[in-house]
Image 1 (cartoon, one colour):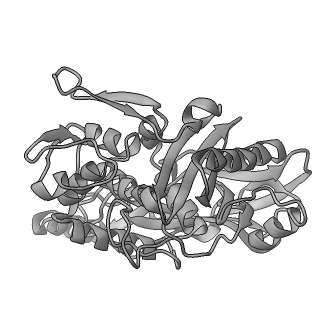
Image 2: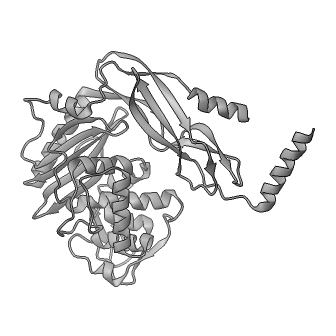
Image 3: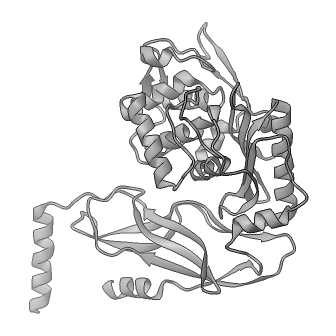
Length: 397
């Protein structure tokens, strides 16, 4: 077994795959060159279009500009909710209580009352479909203890994702000085959120009801009208304030390819939808993807020291694909898997245990973390003693 593990790490699992012959590492430069003189969008402050699995930029306009994101802020709020569910820290059916502070939120809301309880699933519906500020704060308080502590988590996650043009002051996007993001950063957050495939069951829903069997039945209608009127759109989040104007981070899937389009600062909701539609049409007419791995697919086995289990499966943390222009020729690339050494228990589900890379002409064109498929607790002294005793016994034979 040790010999097999050493072979896996040493050989890096070099495997032939397919990739476009002109797939370039300089994504930003290519995005600008391809669209020079034929700008796709107009009448917005900034915009970006990316392919989800590779993160390749297909188009951008002022994508690094710091701007108020309004309710698109809730993409990060939903990301931390989905992470908590994925790690078992929160369940779908758990009832979450609404504090007086959460119930006092202005702006868009689902009109939670102090002391009212809703399940995580219902709260997420209220956030994803109805853009409920009250539901966002209630979930923040459940996960972190207070909105302030949750905002710290949001900014820590932004730093982890390498976002250089984002800083949060609240969970909702309500106007406040120093609360900002960019089209590029918002696309990265959306990319991360879409790792959790269940999220589109909420963001892709056009309408739903809360308190359905009561006299306070509440109708939710998605503020993202493209969910209804553009085939394949199943998220993610709109935003509007007087300062931010009309914003939208949208995602759509067609023929196995998922893309993300972001606009900031459109003058009207109609114009916002029109500009996002242009980007989606461009992506689906010009590009195609070649899926390689689904999320949570086993790639290798990582050894663990001092754990109840001696090893854990290393799985993909997100879907992985290769991107080509339609009709483009392809050529070989190689796959390289590196599993971390010296991993010690305790280990949590989702902790990084390795990396998978796709390499072409000596250059890494795609890199993604491999994570632990489950949590591994630290072994007790008796278990460690028995293992050591067994090793001594074998050594003496």
